[in-house]
Amino acid sequence: MPTGPQIILTLKVLVTAVTVLLAVALWAIASGRKKLHGRLNTAFFLLTLTTVVAFEALLRFGVDVKATFTEEQRRALLVHLCFAVPSALLLLVMLPSGVRKYKRLHLACGAVFLIAWVGTFVTGVFFLPHAG
Ligand code: HEM
Image 1 (cartoon, rainbow, N blue to C red):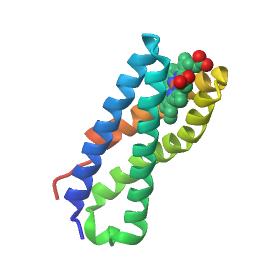
Image 2: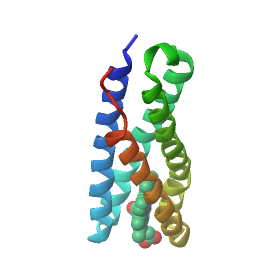
Image 3: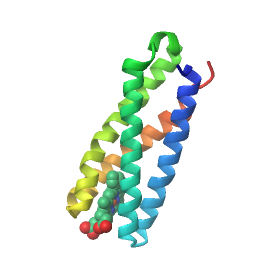
């Protein structure tokens, strides 16, 4: 079984990697490359949802949370999940609204999603203590 610091470091790498993907997808739509935006964000969607589901499953069924993480880490993880889970739920609206070209819905949810994602990134990369 992985240790707490290993799990947290892996999470940081994954959150950083998908954020780079999202940033490039936003640059793509800002410069009019709609198809590229769609493709990059489809990859972002699959990677992010897989990470959130795998991570939730690991915490619920895979490891003994109390024995694996310090109290400080548990508190920081909870705060992180308060942003990551809503972000993942909003993605379930973002992908279909993009594919079906419901532009107003896509942009309105996009604004809320971006706020939730900034929270996910900051709490996931900067505020999670990964030293045991
Ligand atoms: C967060 C900020 C985002 C903004 C501002 C944004 C903006 C846009 C805009 C303006 C379009 C063109 C819509 C049209 O002309 O009808 C579009 C298309 C699309 N978006 Fe987004 N989007 C964002 C995030 C996302 C996310 C997170 C996903 C997927 C999870 C996504 C998936 C798509 C897809 C699949 C399309 C259709 C591309 C195509 O026509 O080939 N977008 N987006």
